[in-house]
Length: 146
Image 1 (cartoon, rainbow, N blue to C red):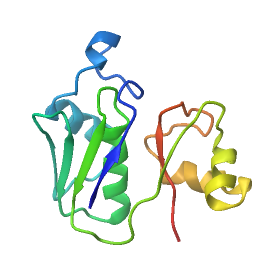
Image 2 (cartoon, rainbow, N blue to C red; image 1 turned 30 degrees about the horizontal axis):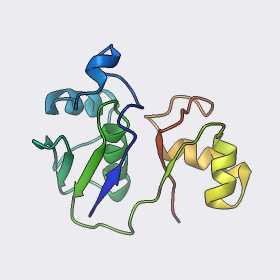
Image 3 (cartoon, rainbow, N blue to C red; image 1 turned 90 degrees about the horizontal axis):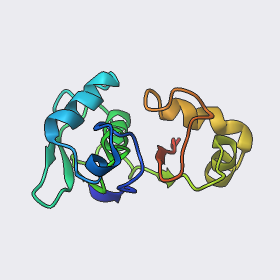
């Protein structure tokens, strides 16, 4: 369990305009985004608090699904924090914030020790990533752990 910070003005805009992107998305919009990505949210609930913090709670199907749901909602424009209230099913997730100039190879070298392991990061972030070259500054990536 923990609180994960995201770049609020970076991420996928579910609203269409910059002005609306400053607002935290509504629960139904976030739930639809997770559903559209095909993530199995069985046993999970997504709520938006009065403070704008998104809370993911319940029992996830797996640690991987829990981490992907946190990233899916956190990488939406307007979301600044995601609180993980899912009981621990394993080790704490490892996330990496993409910086300007980053590539998946550079992230793999920094976090996994080998640039050629970039595909592991790509696969760990599917379906949120559609292509290894389509990452952006401020985006949070899941770093797979053995």
